[in-house]
Image (cartoon, rainbow, N blue to C red; front, side):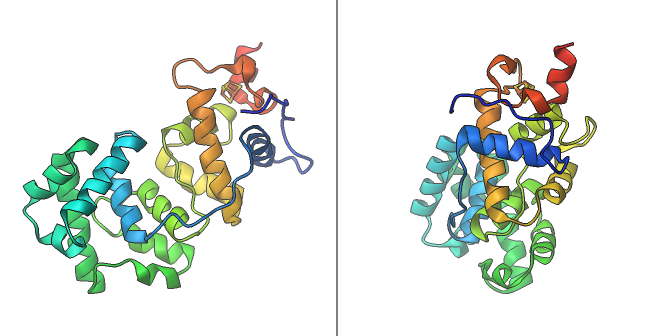
Length: 233
Ligand code: SF4
C-alpha cells in the first residue's frame, strides 16, 4: 500500500463515498475492469469460494474442470463424485448438491447449460434472473454480474461490509445483503469504479481495517471514518 494520504471527510460535493473511493484508489491503485471468464464458470467458482480461501477455491475449481468434460456431466454425475472432485474447497457435501441444483435450474429455465443469455440483459433483469436460481444470493449474483458480465454490481463480502459499516458509508444496522443496493446506488454505474471499490475495500479490510483490531494509526481514511471519530474522542 502507498504511504497514507489522509482523506477529507467528504468530497467537494459533500459525498462520503466519493472521498472514500478516491482515497482507496490512491492507496491501492485504480483498477480497470477486465473480464474474468465465462459467466457459468464464475457462478460455479463463486459457489466453491464460499467459506474458503482463494487458493482452495482455485484448486477445487480446477479439479472439477479436470474431473468432468462439461457441466452437463457435472449435472448428471452422482453427487458424491462431484463432492469428491471439489473436496479441496471444503464443505463439499454442501457445495456439490448446490452446484447440481443450480445446473438443473439453469437447464430447466434456459434449455442449455449456459449463462450467455444474461449478456443481452440489463443489470436489473440479469440480477433478477440469477437470484431466481436456487442458493444464489446477492453476493454470488453480483460476482457473476461484475466479474464475468462487466455490469456495475458490487459484491459485498465480509471485508467490504465491515469497512463500509465502520466508515459510515452504510448504517450500523444495514446487513450485507441490503448493503449491495445501498452501496451500488452510491457508487453509480461506472463498472471500473465499482470494480475498484470492491477490490480496494477487500484489500483494505485484509491489510488495515481488520476484523478484530483495525490499524487506524496507519489508515488514510481516518478523516472520513465514523468508527475512528468515536474512538479518537
Ligand atoms: S480509520 Fe480505522 S476503522 Fe476507519 S476505515 Fe480506517 S482502519 Fe477502519
